[in-house]
Length: 253
Image: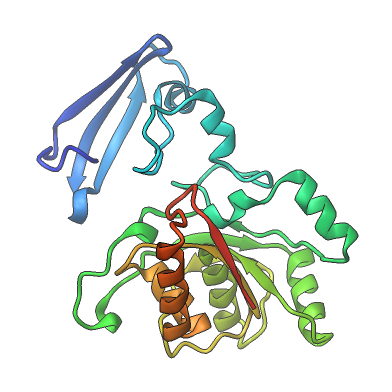
């Protein structure tokens, strides 16, 4: 809850609009502004529909305008299916339906997994020892068809390229659980990837530019090498690339 760090258990907040009224009661306080809340709609209407009607899309700070209806489409991947993430997996925002069709024509296979991005993804690293940082678990699901595609690609010596750090974390977590093999199933991604990590699921990564002191930047550094990543970031700053959700991306192979 930002702002709202002073709201204690028992405090209530009302969200009002033409579509109706939502009420939130704080049940428990957690670190870094997080709360467990009870959220309900007045009048018995559907709370999920009211969230969509009253809520706003979080725009990066360099976009100096209010959010619009178009942002609801733009701040979403074309392949999203299941509700559950707290934010869009931003590397996927670069893909359009036309681009995916072009990749298919070029012989690039596409496999999909479900990963619900959690708030902990954005939790800054505030400890002196990297090993002491905890990345919160995130639920993911890999079906049989996707697991089979990944196994065939690796057996054939073809590259598996992950779109996004959250996808990478899910696949590598599955590989850890499967003794090096990505197997079908559902679990919570718990692995924390930082330099020194041995990748066993992916061979390439498409990702956006991330904030300093973030677990996402550590993951990218673990995959590409710290010095290479820092050099790429220096070039990005010099060329005035955009960071955050609507920012530029890079392909690491």
